[in-house]
View (cartoon, helix red, strand yellow):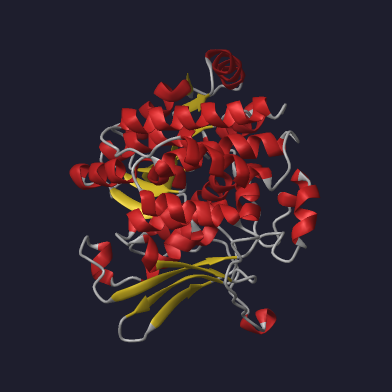
Amino acid sequence: MSHPQRITVLGATGSIGLSTLDVIARHPERYQVFALSGFSRLGELEQLCLKHRPQFAVVADADAARVLQGGLQAAGLATRVLWGEAGLCEISAHPDVDAVMAAIVGAAGLQPTLAAVEAGKKVLLANKEALVMSGALFMQAVRKSGAVLLPIDSEHNAIFQCLPGDYARGLPAVGVRRILLTASGGPFRETPLADLEHVSPEQACAHPNWSMGRKISVDSASMMNKGLELIEACWLFDARPAQVEVVIHPQSVIHSLVDYVDGSVLAQMGNPDMRTPIAHALAWPQRIDSGVPPLDLFAVARLDFQRPDEQRFPCLRLARQAAEAGGTAPAMLNAANEVAVAAFLERRIRFPEIAGIIDEVLNLEATVPVGSLESVLQADARARSLAGEWLNRHGR
């Protein structure tokens, strides 16, 4: 390109967004921030705008937009502030944008991520829910528009790096037998099962290896995060659920592996720092410095692996069942989980009840084929309603 790549960062105030901006700032000759979005951390978003001077910023609603616009104007910035889903879609599909970091957590990221895909952008996908909810429609849109889709989750980025080079050029990944999706096991990997009834949101959010937001931290503790990643891997790499095996690897040094029919197993390794997959996707097919220190194998000293216990992690079982059922089941799984996790973080339910709510929602609502984005959104809304009814029925 004759100019620096112009980047939209959706979810700029979250951990992925901040790591993205850190990598971008290391390479001002290659990258330029075009637009930033933030939801509730208005002060932090304002500071990011003052530092990176984007053309656009997007916030949740008109009131927040007025506040931010006033602050930026007072500082002499010409940044235009938009709001709501329409604003997010505008900065994702804008003709001047070269790449979009899709890092909004949850179902809220679906529409703007899809807008970037439909506009044929280079999409750095950190929002796994977009694929979980609408996998077939999403991948169809990628093929139709010619968008470049690069995974940011450390596991999927690792798989991408371990697949044959032809795969990155749109050809089938010939000779792959299994995908081995690694998981740290989270903070409750060795907690006595009886004690899970009494764990707090603070304990669930205290991940041993990664620094993440509260929602994704709880998902990691329940291993729903790995379940969603299993569904995402099936769509990204055209794999059947039976071909994706979850492996607990407490050190989080091997980020995932690909098993080939000739007996070769390729693994991608590195320190647990999201700047590595972000830098890889930003520069692909080249490599750039991410700011991550080299991996010290002597300090790591050992690598451990174990099978996940589905009695301890029932969310993983539920996610695999949803992947096998297909249709609207993954969208309902994700929606019920979002409601349940929010209730847990608000101390309205106990940790094991997250899986209980999801299980009930999936059993109450029949899975139907996904024919349109509207059917996905209807399934999402229905699952949220059923999860809310569970909370009301149990006085939560």
